[in-house]
Length: 96
Image (cartoon, rainbow, N blue to C red; front, top):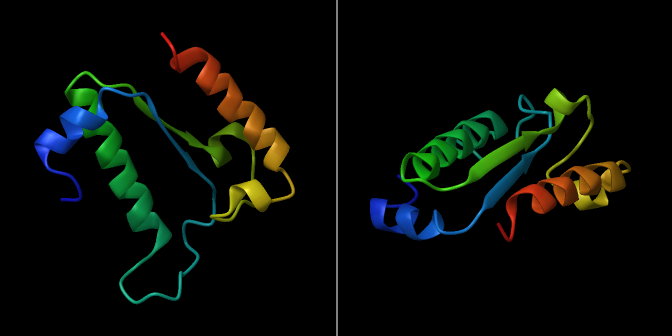
């Protein structure tokens, strides 16, 4: 478990967005570490935050038709398209 229940409650006081690209099957080169596992951990984290009343969500780019992103989304060729999605999420979720 990455965060204990008390930490989750603290994190749940702020809106949380996770942005995830494709390439889940690509090996990271680190033994025992793969992107699919990290993706699943992120989904579990979101569920835990929501369970205590927090606002957490993920933009999974392939579901938006955006493909080819690495873990350095801000440096990818489509970074402005992704930034637009993030800015929309911020407008809808931050400061409410």
